Image 1: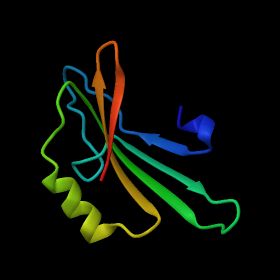
Image 2: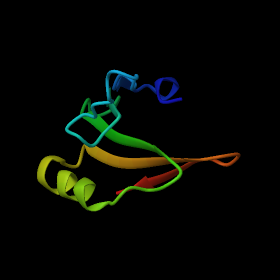
Image 3: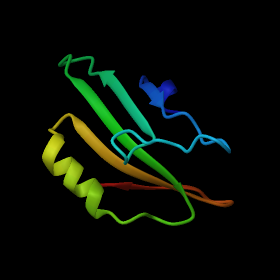
Image 4: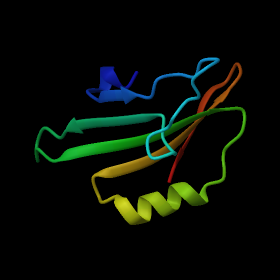
Length: 90
C-alpha cells in the first residue's frame, strides 16, 4: 500500500515465541521515507500499527514535538475487523 505510493518502507521484524517485537525508538512499527519530486525534500512517515485499541497518545506527541520537523508525519493505524484501518494523524 505505502510502496505503491512511492514510499521506501522499513518494517520492524515481527514477534516470535522467543523474540519480542522491538519497535523503532520503542514506539513505531514502520518508518517510511520518500523524496518529494518538486522540492527534492525528504518526507518521513512514522507509523505505529495496533489491533483493536488506540494506545496512549502522549509518548507519540512527545516524540513528534522533540524530534520531528515539517517533513515528518506521525500516525497511528488501528486495525478494526471488517472495517480496515482507522488512521490517526498526530
